[in-house]
Amino acid sequence: MAVRGKASAWRQAMLIAASITALSATGAFAQQAGDLTDLGNRVLENPQDADLNLQYAAAAEAAGKPRLALTAYERILINDPTNEAARRGYERLRREIEPGYTIARVDVGVLQDSNPRNLYSPYFNTPDSTTYYGRLMVANEHEFFGRRWRSILNATLEDNQDRDELDYGFIGLQTGPIFHPAPHMAVIPSIGAGAAWVGSEHYFNEINLGVTLEGRAAGMSYWARARGGYREYDGENFFFFGSIPNDGTYAELQAGVTKPHLLFERDTLSIEPFWRMSDVSGDIFDFAPGKYDEYGIDVNYTYQVTDHLQASVGALVRRRDFDGYDRTDDYVSPQASLTLQRALPCDCDVRVQYRRRENDSNDFISSYGADQISLQLTTRF
Image 1: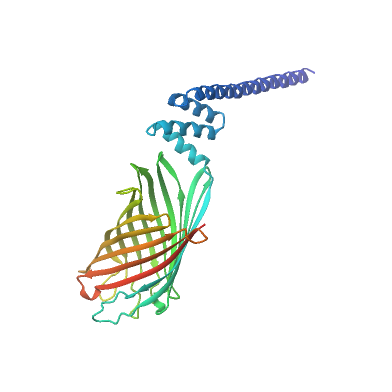
Image 2: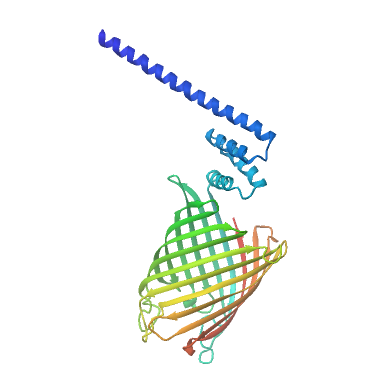
């Protein structure tokens, strides 16, 4: 009997404690709701008060209403775009609320090249060649174990109508988590893999690691990427003396800055410098084509002529120094294009582009020139 009485008393004590906890929680939620309502009324009386809106945003987050908090941060930024607390809160909540997404881009086109094999024209016949191509890019962002991840799939297929050895295919995947060290900045470490084919033969496999930085500042968007990887070539079928490329590492640094409204309301300038190092073994006649350092820049200026017509001019310039062999190639490739945007009954663009390709090498037989004209259809979904 004594034991039964003690158990009954213990159960009563637990019920009382649970009731007190529930009442306390209910009171806390009621207090939060009351604070939020009171702050909301005060914000209505003085919507430009930044401190009051920050208090309201904090109360809304505590009450589990992030969209109300986001609205409060927006009110502050309308009146004071430099308010750092509002900027950080807005970017953080926007990322938390934003749902996952998947987008895709498809490019299909035809390219005419006057020297597709990059041959020295005084010694070799360089007939024109036509290549049909398709490119697919699929980007996905989703939450995984409490962290937003980005994955990007790239695939390319090129079919040359004149020479089978110029057919090319590639497929690659990158994936990694997204970190936000600042309101308008993202850091994305990633791991990737890819494979390529030339003609009907397997060409190489690769794995890589990288980190990408993205952001906005001073009216510009920017990005930078460092990546290193390992490639293993299957080159036995590509040269009658044996395999030229074998296997080895590579590293690259790339960056880009895009500045809209540079000179006019409807223009944009993009600048993309880069550096690459390749240490892929394999040589022929004491020349190792897979061992080199390369650096350059790609600059393009775009002007929105009308709502449906965009014009662009630019140039790619690079220098490649081959290791262990006295050869340096200077490559210059200016381009001009016109793009007809969203004029078809789909989310499609049609672009026509001319590109000149000039390679000046101190190994004169490796110098070449070529003209390219391409017509491309781009669609997004």
